[in-house]
Length: 113
Image (cartoon, rainbow, N blue to C red):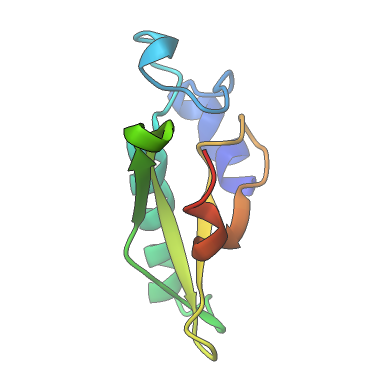
């Protein structure tokens, strides 16, 4: 992702790993899903404000997680397709530094672990 490549060297996140969470310790170069959700949503909101999103609008972040079903808690940024109303996740937490985000319908994403 262009943004990761541009900002990573400046803020020290070029060694960022996929799925970083409390098990990654206090490594300041990693993001948990809350960080990636805020960062991705903020970037998407800027793109929307600049008129760069023609077919989508920024939606509310989504959350999944059910410890009873052995599903770990997780949240992510969302885009809404204007023509159909279908919500799409834009999930950078599941990818490492400079990798493209996972993009899929929210309906599929909520079933994953």
